[in-house]
Every structure is written in structure tokens, then in C-alpha cells.
Length: 374
Ligand code: SF4
Image (cartoon, rainbow, N blue to C red):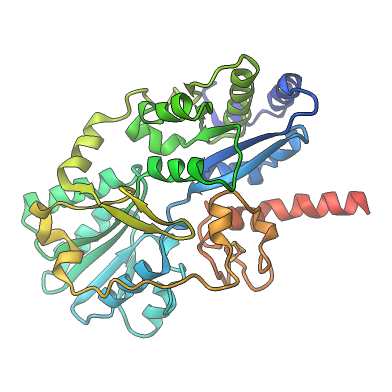
């Protein structure tokens, strides 16, 4: 397989679907969590649930970087952005994430200078071009994006660009998976492991899931056949009584990850004692902050930040969706008060959010099912 169409071949998908069905024990229900929001997007965009037997349920995990940012951190970022000497920079999908006082877009409408960037290097360029302003990069994401933030800080240091700083909100996936495994709310049979994060951390850090929790995990790619093959590999492990970490995405994910990227991250950042995740609460050692050596580039040390804590709106059930306890359409405000244009919760903002994926693709297949059963 060399081209993307080959990963979307309907014939091969049907063949895999038949192999999946043949591995299911009659009468047994299977529940697999796709950890990564990119997988959720693929599952609904390509209607993959239609290829699975009814006794397989896919539930969504916490792997959407925008979705897990708590409202308080958005308010803290807006507090920085409102300073007249600051240019805040952010990825586009953060712009509509609601905080307690509105979103970045609302703040821009009130006069704050917030610019969308495609990478932290773009933010560094803005800092170079505006030496009389302080340029802050709103850093979000899992281990996938942390290396580019770290490398940019190292570049800023090398070039002595002191008006560039990072508001660091990078989170780490392993503690979140552990929190889900320890949660009494959910019984899972296995995990479709996050492909992008694994390009950096490798497959080794998941070993405890197989060893201590006896759950199989298959690191998966993002094309439809990748995901179907991963489900087949999970079922094969269960059928053979194994619980192991396997790598379906070996064409991209080296087993040992990317040591150079990890070195850069470790050089610039360190684990925080704890961090608040939207919907999941405080999880210990689950996020990265800047090391003291890079204090000149650390927005949390440069600016006086209120450290706001804001409860999610009452109607919002993102926490249950992020833990896989609720399907998006089971939230009371899904598709009515909460839509991609008017998001109440974060899961409706990013294309990787489970609610946005359902809203954009999945709701049509549900409507088809409802029509067919009328
Ligand atoms: S529909 Fe909106 S409020 Fe409800 S869980 Fe999804 S994002 Fe959160």
C-alpha cells in the first residue's frame, strides 16, 4: 500500500469487516476506546461503525488537545492577551474554545490582539518582527506538538529573542489513559492507541495497560483500513487470550518513538505536579510546564496570571464524552444549543472533538438508522 486511496478501498474494508465479525464471540459485547480525536474523526467521516457488527461499540477518549483545555486556562490566556503590550498567538482551533469570559474571538472583538498561527515558529517570526511587543504562544497539545514548542524555545534562546514566550498547556496522554482505566464508570475491552502521540513517545509507555490492566492496545493509523485492521488485531488478541501492545501504524510509528524529539521536550519542559483537564478534573503528572532555565520564555513567570478556576456550564457534558461514558448525541444540548457555530463545550469546537465529528458526519447515519426503523 503506497497511496491514500489504497487505505480507503471499500472491497478491502468489506473483507476486514467479515474477518472482524468472524472473531466476535456470539453474545459477547465488545467496547473499544479510540483514544485519539483524529480516529474519532475518521470513524464518523467514513462511516466505519457501519462496517462493524452490532456487538462492537467504539467509545471516544480524551485525545483531542483542544477539548481537554479547562475554561480557567482560556480565561488566563485572555487575561494575558488583553495587555496592550502583548500579541497572543494561537492555533486556529483554539480561537472558538469558550472560557468563562468568552473565547479568543470574543476577546479580539473587544480589542485584544490575537493572531492565528500554523506553528510556534510563526509566533517566533512575529516576535522577531515586533521587538517592542511581547509575543506569547498559546501552546496546546499532547506529546505530538510539545517537541515543536520546545524546539521553538531553543531557537528563541539561540537567537536571543527575549520578547517571545510560551503559555504552556501541553498535556501527556499516559496519565489520562490511566485515569480512565481507574474510573469505575467504564468497562473497556481494549484501546485503539493514538498514532500521532506514539510517533514521539513510541509504544513502550503503553506496556502497563497490557501488563497491569490486562487490556490489549493497538497503535493505529488514521485511514479507514488502519482503524478496521486495528479492531481486527484487538479482537484477535482477545480471541487468543492475549493482552499486548501491538503497532498497526509501523509505517510511521517507530517502536521506540522519536528520541530526539523527547530530548528537546525534556530539555525545555518538565512534568507539573498536577494539571486540570476539562471534564476529567485534576490529574497528577499529566502536563508539562517550562523549566526554570527558560523562565525568560515562560509566560506563567513573566505575567501575573490569575490562575482562574471555572466550572463547566451545567448543560455541558463534555467530561462524560471525554471519558467515553456518554455518546455525543446523548448530551442534552447536542445539536440544539451546542453546535460548531455556537459551542457550549470544547468537544464541539475542534474537528477532532467527538461532538463535532458526530455533528458533521455521524448524525446523518443516525438519521438514516432512525428513518429505516420508522
Ligand atoms: S454537545 Fe456540546 S456541551 Fe454537550 S458534550 Fe458535546 S460539546 Fe459538550
